[in-house]
Image 1 (cartoon, rainbow, N blue to C red):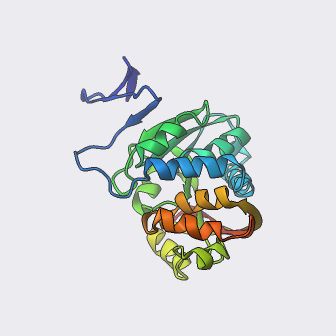
Image 2: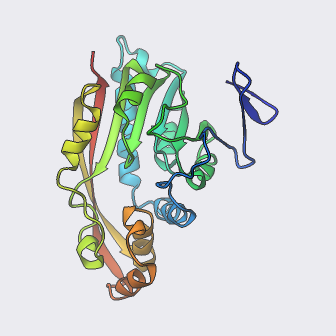
Length: 272
């Protein structure tokens, strides 16, 4: 596609307007996505991530991407200019921006189904393009265009991920472990992480990718009442809890809660 007159235009004449906030929506059809994060969820995520609570994870993701680029191909060619990092389910662009800070020779594309999230992603980094798109549909990216594909707390479309990645590209997947947000999960009645999460991740990528590296990332967080409300409001529990009831429970917590952040990060390469 070519950019002109504040719109993306394809050779067939289709045009997609560039919003004044700097993003473009490539969703088709009139049906509103039912799983898109709301304005309130995105605001909570922006507040929580902006306070640096998940900074250790963002640094680990950036390190994983840099390592993946250094080991792709042969002869150290992985650090040459022109690399493209694709983030499928990018949210506000927080993790992709940290990756681009670490990789001055790379550009990024943030994809998310929530226009509220993508509006913020469009401002997250100067070398980042933001697109509203559905991970469950064909991705609006040409085959073999991405050197690294990020998937942080987002759905996984194994076939499409394999199509858009270079043959020697890497897929970096981050998921929470069952220990994530202890002891808030029990005290506030939040959704817990399924014990079969790891198996379901493997199944979603089976036949397309092989896991080549895995690491665990766990660190403590000291959260005040505002941060606790933000971490609840930005995640899947936000769809299932009553905000007023949660605020009452949060008010009963100590002024500062010691909370565990716990994640699993895996790097995959395409099956040859």
